[in-house]
Amino acid sequence: MINFCFDKTTNHEYVNFVPNLITNVYINQCAVTYPYVDYPRLLEYLDQEHIKYNIHPVDNCPTGSFYFININYFDHSVDWFQLMPLTTLKAVKDKKIKVLFFYCEGDAPHIIRETLHRLANKHNVDPMQIHFICHTTVAETLKNFYYFNDDEILFKNAQNYSKSQALWHDKLRSKKFTCLIRSHKSWRLVAAADFYANGLHKDSYTSYNKISYSDGFDHTDNFTDPPQNPLWNGSYARINSFKKIIPFSADVLTDDEHNNYETFVEHFYTDAYWNIVVETHINISGTTGTFITEKTWKPIRHNQPFIILGTVGSIKHLQELGYHTFDGIIDESYDYIKNDSLRYEKVQDVILNLNSKSYEELHEINHQIKPIVEHNSKLFNSSKKHRLEEIINKLLTSN
Image (cartoon, rainbow, N blue to C red):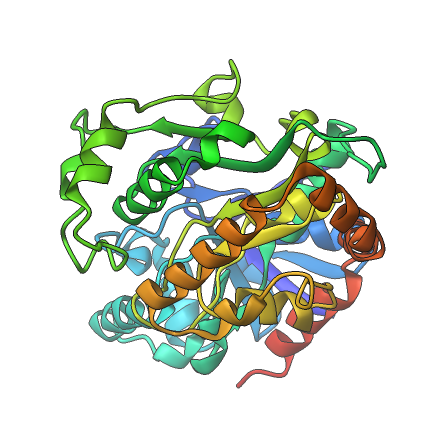
């Protein structure tokens, strides 16, 4: 059985610890305030699947226990070891306890590893005492780094809570596509501008909602920067035309509601034949790692076929997880193209081919994909106990 340790433990009936390194007394604010730590969701998942674990105070825990730090945002300026109580840091140095980070974003793990190892050396901590669970598959190529798709469970739990579930149906639909983009990124701007120029918005539920970040500046002028925009193709006219009409939305929800995993707008799934998923990342800092988020899980949960504009190998990874995809109905060879720009061009071809079909043809395809989408929704809604047991076993057998 795995042992977790915390600086502060309690006798509370439901939560018998305080999240490590928390600075904000309001639990609902700690994730968005320095140092951006959060309640350890992994323990909630273990509870749901009745997987046993032990909680101990740091000063009275078995050797080899994991000091759990759940991060909402990895700030490279944070010195995690300096934030630890001196007794905790000593236990790490003495190799009595290990440090376990849990991070649900897609930041490049090799860059995070460099930061953590630099901090470890600064504090005379053996870097092998550091363990890191994150959301991108490339993590598995690094010692003591582990891949776990947090969103697969998090989104399922949220949709279960709001009792949201769209089913496959045989009725005619009024739209060919759903393609929703909440936040601006330069490569997304190129893709959305191309979709618009090709007329896809006329038969779609589409949005491009948020064009500025919290610093108050409009960032849509940065689209020609190649490191930030691997899809840039020199189409100034399309970009400038598209910029005149953004932001626009497919609904009347607020940005917070758009970003809430419990939110469910049924007709986006039941009244459109295909979902064009514009994922969070087009690549993971130049690696071949995949990063699959709620953007992909939404059509899977809600019985809708999809095309993914995201990291290379996303379709392949879904298949490795047991999901079925649509090769033979559409050309999914785009998933194997490592060059982001060329992969995007292939995705465009797939979308334009579907767009050229009549509603009658798309409705016939809808019958063909019924067993696929129903399999996927059933698998998504099923227990993920085996994946949780796998990640726990990796931690227990690590050096």
